[in-house]
Image 1 (spheres, rainbow, N blue to C red):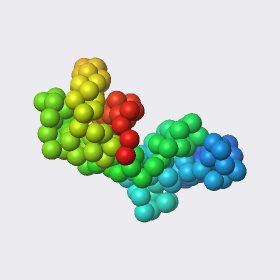
Image 2 (cartoon, rainbow, N blue to C red):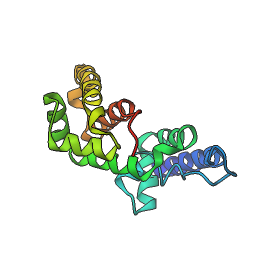
Image 3 (spheres, rainbow, N blue to C red):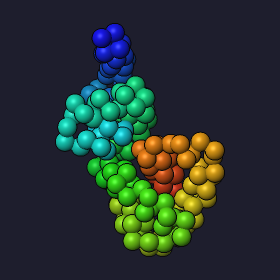
Length: 166
């Protein structure tokens, strides 16, 4: 019971602190993405179920990643980024293998979702390969959950695809 009460208090605290932050950079307060339903891993996993997205984001890291995305870079809460995150989560094992090889159908499809042109794909793949080699080399990597691995992969791809646009 006290664990549930503590979780509810944490959610309320995060919501009260972050609610004013959920505004677009150039718009009036409240016009940006909702960090708990539109951003973070919760939004990627539960697109059509707001309560599940909120629960996931708060459980994941008290919502700090989702809030940071919404306030610092609201464009990361776009449907394209959410589609990419879901695709990576759903096909992580294939993507990891294809990234190691430097080619593959899933890898190409993911880069299409990120809006990469054919001329950009090789550079992006090389960058992601180098980043993932470092991540996979960390001793604790094999003990990570699939969500953690997919999240690390998403972050590497998202950084590498900065010059790509849909």
